[in-house]
Image (cartoon, rainbow, N blue to C red; front, top):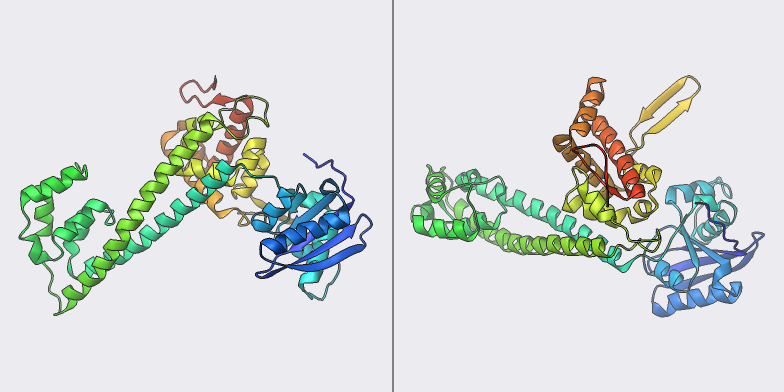
Length: 416
């Protein structure tokens, strides 16, 4: 939807680590003021007061920024100003209208952004006050991903250390960072110690951790396989390193469990009282609808809600496929026409949509048939998965518009 508001003053903030450069233009493009402000509470308050002292009212001023979040944006929105964000690459192209030499400084950047907002507002994206629950969900989602990455890094280091002297442990489970496997190592940190393990102790450990895919006899048989020969001091050095890794892994495992439980709680809370209910004029069931679609799990759902809440609330299919990298890029000139993958995408959203489509091909017959058809046409695995994701995004927007849940049995959604 095109912004129909009329602004008579246009400002821009060029962010800095310690100081932010601001520029205010009138409706004709004349510079009404330029000034730098410190990055602290007093400085940001002074920035807002300075803009309002020139514009007179928050309703007639539009402010341009590059980064669509942070304390500067929060301060401006809190004062009721209309804040607009623009991609840094687009702003870089706008700069060429004023200086083709490539010269760059903070004052020029603030002026270019303000004048670009004045003349080409359609290139900017209007920012709104985010729902506090979505802000919290976004942070927990990103924290869970960060913890998962840290867990993988630590488990890879643990794998390398066990490979040095104790490869038998690696045969117990593919997930060597699991708590029960860490407990096994604590009880028997060396091949010699494994011979002293009692069957009853191992059984109690497996029962305590609810492990049923392997029994105590199999654990002992694996650990008591012939040990490899190592130089003197290798075992002691490796156990010192592993003990430190296990201490960190236990913390990461605990924090990751807490983060996933919190994601479930927040998604359930949003399902009971969706933040977009007032915007669409009635109670919404967006989360229930998204959960009903094949391939969506806890992590993917949280990322979709946290990183794409705006396009989802607007049911904006084109924005979703662009942000997630599903929409291809066409380069055509004369007789040449090349269609390539879109790399300018939201990384977390791109990965979430990829895994959503990948899992859907395993459980949804229609998604699987679409994937097979694309593969038979000569497309790569990644291209075929993006084709499935494109269909799923279109289907999700349609279901959200109609407020219906996905019905895999009859192919016709049921009204919620």
